[in-house]
Length: 296
Image (tube, rainbow, N blue to C red; front, side, top):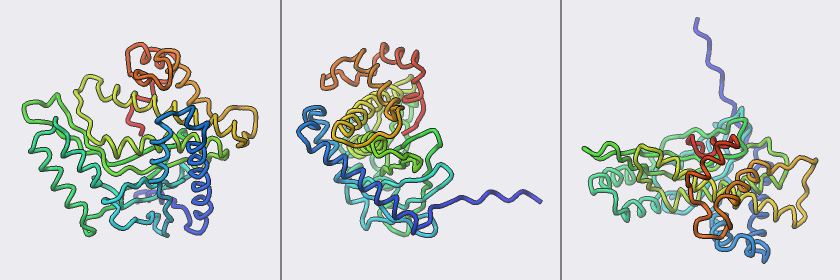
């Protein structure tokens, strides 16, 4: 007899309430930081964008089937759902597919031909009907503190198969419930909220097959690491406790140290340029994984 597949573990709804409260406290902490004079001095215009992203955050409840609470007419709103899971757990979202704001960006994209836009229009309007909703699984690897995830539609033009258009759908954020320090949660959520905003604002990726996707991803990762690390440092300055001697912000700090050494000031125009020099520096430091796989 075939071995029965192991059952997937889902959070208990009553127990999950405490996780919701912790996520909300972390988001309140981020919002307070980016609204503070120190936050704006350090982050500049990024403080405004992060504040807007936090304002879009949605911390849903979860039912006995592991499905997170769906926001009515979610595709017409600017929202970023956030869940907290142990690596052994899964949850599910029905808020999937292309949101209206992303669809509007598709229509404005000059590099997409009308045939592709028509196909995406059909997908968008089909996804707005409740009977067409499906469940997408959410989970978090043990080695990750957080990730931003979405469905992605990849298309190529006939006769131009070397050119791919990737259209990102509604983002969701998953953070690792093993994070015990509020400072690390603030760093992680700041990082992932920037990715969530990027997914909503820039859903169309036009790329060839020779590393352009990795460069695109690297630029976004450099920015998210730089912002997350700075918000975490401000949290420490403002009195958030760090338990134990080891810095929980070490990963962001390592990436940001290299970025600053190679690309210069955080607020400069080329701060997040994915050039060959920074790629080599990251590779030499064993940090290639931040951009070489579809991890966000």
